[in-house]
Image (cartoon, rainbow, N blue to C red; front, top):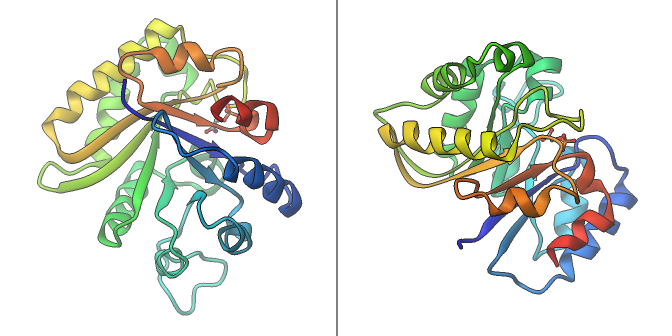
Length: 238
Ligand code: PGA
């Protein structure tokens, strides 16, 4: 099997010391062909972490589109480049719900990230209502169509399928449902041009379901929130 992407999304759970401690654990792992580990610490801690853990790979949890200059409170894409950050999460559900990020904005951020040679980790996913009314596939297709452009040739894109009702709830779709959705996404993404596309699952991934999820044929990795703040979970990947 190919290498799996393991994204740790530490959200705003951890302080600097805790982020350093987890980074230290990760930095001691032997280089692995099985897992590519990418940590997304709170954006405020990037400099301290990347300076101390040069071999770890980090992603930002977001960046903004307001541009350099008079944009108070913004994190510009140029700041990521300047600090050698290669990956960025875009369109996380909490950016969508707390900051009004829409698929249109996600599309613009996607464009800004690829123009700057960042590798985007694009998050999509359906609400519980959509899931219950069995409209998940239609919804995801429309998200993909809004976010990606047929005319564009993309380099590497990581796409995280995260059902909104699964994030932080302890609920997940059935394993067969996860694989079926990731298969569906693989199929509809064939209409677009990517050098490399990796489809991840996210939402209540933890020690008790990680092995089974990583075995799924169409799942190239996982995006993990709260479980990834625990050393016991992180050590699974050593
Ligand atoms: P969770 O979060 O693992 O805590 O459910 C996942 C995510 O928000 O990406």
